[in-house]
View 1 (cartoon, rainbow, N blue to C red):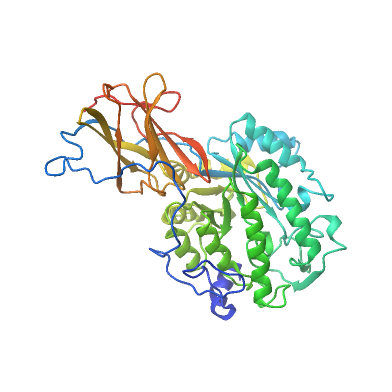
View 2 (cartoon, rainbow, N blue to C red):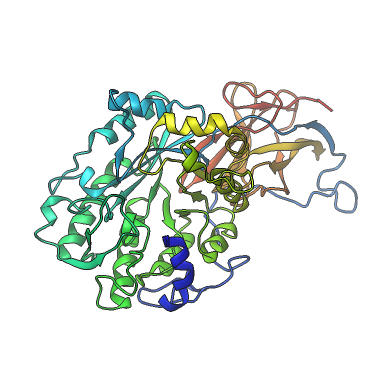
Length: 518
């Protein structure tokens, strides 16, 4: 029996929940599951210079945009568009180590993954001991350093997870200098997890031990000092309990290293608060894992949403509450779907009624409106393995890569003049499968680059399948044709350029020039 099957049968017995209640969760408080659609998680992130988003009647007695007419229209792009907050995430390493092909250098093996045409974002998944061996400083492993060097060379961003515990790491994920200081809790043995580890006894560190907490605070502080708000960093995964940092120690039921639920919840609430304070400019990404191991996951997920951080899942065929939270999350929250893929070998295809399991996974990732999707051969990472599958079954991957995340454009551009001032109303649409994971900002500039008007839409907008209008009043005497429209996304106070996802030509600096094409 695999973990997903077992957990679906065990949720009620374990008292598992997925999310926290209507008020900000307090440590130690058990909170019940609820539907996520229209749930009150509080307001979205603060925006600057909110644009007037309507309504915009043309005729008396209101006449907000008198005489308006469509001067320009755009149509959807049919090609891949790369922007911050979305993309196909190519895994460079996991707990089994980095990508490595026989008789090939590590640099070359990683470079081939980074330069795959499928790759939008890079993902590093490693253990605490891979980035620190001594107190007081970080000493990154070779594949971390190579990844960041190559990412800079090829203009790619990196998301990463530092695991505090993994079932396949010997002796532990934490550094050696903690092994004789932090007590270990014996979970037992199992053949359900950990490849090629029959009979291994699994242990969990005493997370709330002062030596563990002090070292973790130091490590995360050092890491954030370098990478919080770093131009190469996309996001950072939340530190969570258990195997792979996913929030569980399945299949060990009713076991964890804490004396009670309150202590466990207090511990991980404290860790989250510390991490959220350190990573003030970079999104944290929390797994939607129900609380199988009873360690406070519900509170962490609730805090994640209320602090405008992001969500992930470690597989798409998973408990129904994970699907509920991912598919009905607030629009400004990004979602990341992680799932191991076929390497194209006959045994790994797992065909069912002519559909490979990987294509089935991709279809369901689209169903929850994901912003990110993993390109990952679990414990067997190689560019050749990804391409072996893609060359046989390209359609689903291509379709997802051209629709993933948000794809925004001004579908309508209306012109008007009121009281001697010209203006534009943009009818902004989103041809992607997910909302904007932050706030979309629009700037109107003249041909010399001077900003004439700018501001933000409400967080998350425009939504897929809907039109969001925004008005820009311009200085007197400005000619509309030739003006340049730019887009950015603002997340945690940082702004990132956004490429328009339209068929019509854009300029090398990302501008869409206003012209009469109707």
